[in-house]
Amino acid sequence: MKKNCFFYRKKKYSIEPNGVITKKSHSNIALIKYWGKHKNKIQIPLNSSISYSLGRVYTVTRLIYQEKKKRNLSIKIFLSGKEKTSFLPKILEFFHRISFYCSYLRDFNFIIETYNTFPHSSGIASSASSMSALALCIMEIEKKLVFSLKKDFFLKKASFLARLGSGSACRSIYPGLVVWGSHKSIKGSNDLYAIPYPYKVHPIFKKMVNTILIIDEKPKKILSSKGHLLMNKHPYARVRFQCANQNMDRLISILKIGDFQEFGELIEHEALTLHAMIMTSRPYFLWMKPNTLNVLHTVWDFRIQSKKNIYFTLDAGANVHLLYPIQEKKSILKWIYSDLFFYCKKIIESFCY
Picture 1 (cartoon, rainbow, N blue to C red):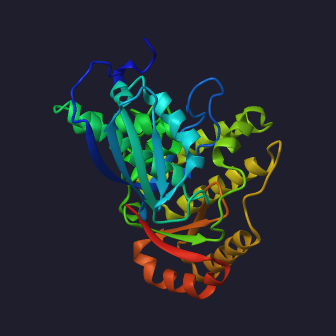
Picture 2: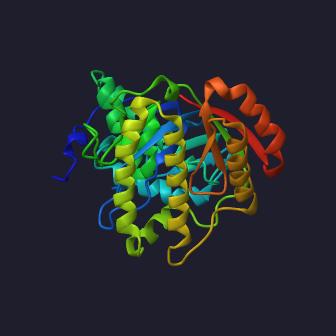
């Protein structure tokens, strides 16, 4: 029996031969970044991470399942109404990985119809929201088979399955602050699925605004999945993993006491560390664009002059996430449109929920 048999489902069940399920899942932005995974294990992180789930930034997936007439598996994928055969290899690999845990999927063919409220593959975790939405659809099929399925198990297994498609997708199953990866200071944290952050959070961090500056809408030339692999021989990898876990300890304390300046400085350090690892990989590459740097410098200057609590973080791409308290939203958002809009293709007004 394979490891993780807690989620194993082998028994044959009866289910209607055709059906349609629709689920929505939000993107997330990591505060402590996950970058690098175990070489000989499937989607197991080399350090713990924590993220906010994001409102107004999500994927809606419609999963149509049809009883299989032939032995071969058939999957069709549509993004915003257009068939995407280029997505098939990743989806087929995902179904292959989860078939041990969801044996009932072998009886069906699938049509996946999906759309995002944000640009795909541009560094706003589209794989996280899309894979988590798909995992939630699959768990709805399982729920039809097992009427007694409890909500806690449903979400836990959905997170487990989503991880097998995209590591950060496991965090998108839950709202709020979400932890993935085993960490000695966080009870219940583990490498197999994400958990809601279990400790006290100061009120200032419960109503956070997230404004996303789209610097570049084009798909990244180097996807995150390939970037992770470059950590296997990275000369600074071991120090990075130690630093990330130490930063998690710092963040636990910050979230409790409500020190926004310490919070901001920590998430900016994490963001720049992530890009430093990218720039010092072999082969090395650069996701930031000139306007990414222009935005960062402008934010720093504004913060010094205004004393406002506005800080940035970056995902694996050129676009910039700005985080600030809801109490300062009116004045900061006005400044964003007046001073930063010049550098952007568009601005997405979101929030951490």
